Image (cartoon, rainbow, N blue to C red; front, side, top):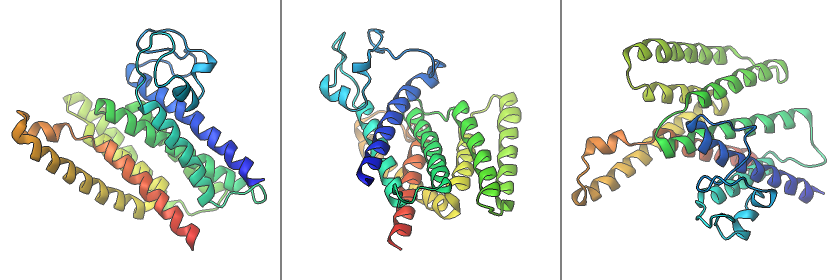
Length: 268
């Protein structure tokens, strides 16, 4: 029976993955992500149901638009597949079974999905635009508050440290939206700090600290590789530094460590 449960979870995952690809493309452009029908970004033709089947449509259409034959970016297929694998992996590491489904496990899975959605949107938008999208950050803050309420009411968890995190978030938001906005300064760094606070709330201090360490390591490797290519390029080190997509690196590191921690608890 569990195989059918995991098939359903995988289908849910790739369906969410399809939504992620749409959201990553539309949110930075200020487009509606709920009511507007899906369309080809090249020829603007509205897509039919057969064009929107996650993973399979990409394979059946051989990575091309059915109408204008424009090549579809592989990221659509990759994000859908990764999302499906992530959903199944988390369910497995949570030891989710048709025989042990409980309210708490369902809520835990829901919040993991909500958080994963947040991270994917942060990573995807930062990769394409080198920006931490403010509406996505607000979504992260909202689900953080919901998660703290859930921990207090359902799991009876002490939330004193979470309240401190929320106060830190409030201070960062105040600085970001009032002081920096008035001075017209780049607030990418403050957005990263807000992202870190949301990560702490959902994945804990241990995972977040390791996320930061891994991020610094990945950035160091990135800068080293860029420096090696610097002799063949006119770009300066300053330009490389300004192009570092910290949100991208942090999101990948955070989800990776989160899975590692779940695996550790699974094995123990």
